[in-house]
Image (cartoon, rainbow, N blue to C red):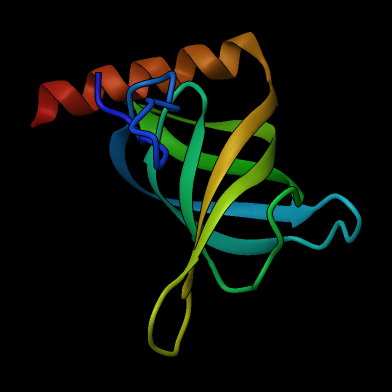
Length: 124
């Protein structure tokens, strides 16, 4: 299982990540204004995303991903929280990189993420 280790070398990630390239919508809970972002990897536990605004660790977000499973267009919605951040170098769209942890996600949406991971593994 691949994962992210802290400075002591202890594994912190509990779910295997897989690469995606998915558009997403998100909003901060306190603002409820939809903005666009990009999910670059996913797992059953969360997402690694590129967003266009600076946020603090602990910020809670509603996120929505749209993708296809087979011939069906579907999506996943979740309540998440910023657990790490890394400002990207350079100017332009999506220059802030964040790790999001799912706080609430429906069982059906979790099933869709697992199916997406399986479909992507088959394609590669």
